[in-house]
Length: 371
Image (tube, rainbow, N blue to C red; front, side, top):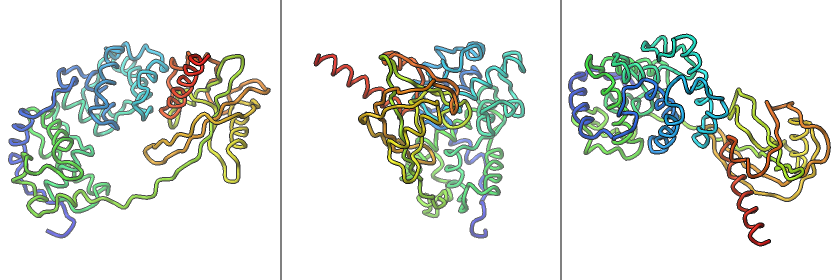
């Protein structure tokens, strides 16, 4: 075999049987595994796209209690969906889930579609999610490949090329389909994902307890720690962001981000990125004027918060401000609103803004206690 090629001579049954037996014994008891309701499985798969299982479980349970069917989700205001999603991150998932629910009502009569092609036509559903819903909820023989499955396949079949390459991706999907049994495809797909999550770990895989240890080619060649091949990572940029907690007559001004793009549909304190050569105060004056058309007086700092996103980091500087002049308008946002400090918790905010709110609430409580 040429270096870097994909070895696929292992017998599918040599992988299926021990993996399914292991899954029967070791599968975690997760709430979405106690049902075959396609709606519940769809919600869980969307949440798990960018979130680890322990973090997703409480959000899932709250979400299906509040929106138990696709009909209740479709009828709900987007603000309510985002508020329930608050803290889970990657908010485009929530927006797409809401859009897809409405499309399921109008296009599919309120029934979650079964086929891969129909599922792929819905917002927020890609090849992996379509395969998961179709196989787990409907028992269809549809493969899936996510990060966990990629890691298992790259090690078991000793794939020594970057799995992000298009040709390697195509081969991994082909392997996943080849391995799928006709019976219990959903269980097999879940077993592959479970193995990657709990045993075939990115670092220090637990090879001694792996049900595939006898057939794993990477282990046989002592290469499990080096696979999958990891491409060089680029430095993560860091942006300086400044926001204002703008007060007027006992109320605070917040604005709503435009629905498209990062954190779309969430509320935030007005502000934006600092430009080169600007002071923090200068940047805040400019951003507030450009975004909502008012002038402010910048006071003392509230907090400096470091927050990481998937592809960049921000250092967010928050200042206490007072309204000076102008009428708030939506130049760079979808809505603006003056709210009482105690009502801030009713709105869905990004995580960094929530930290600011917590600091504000703590300082107000301390101020009340001292008075």
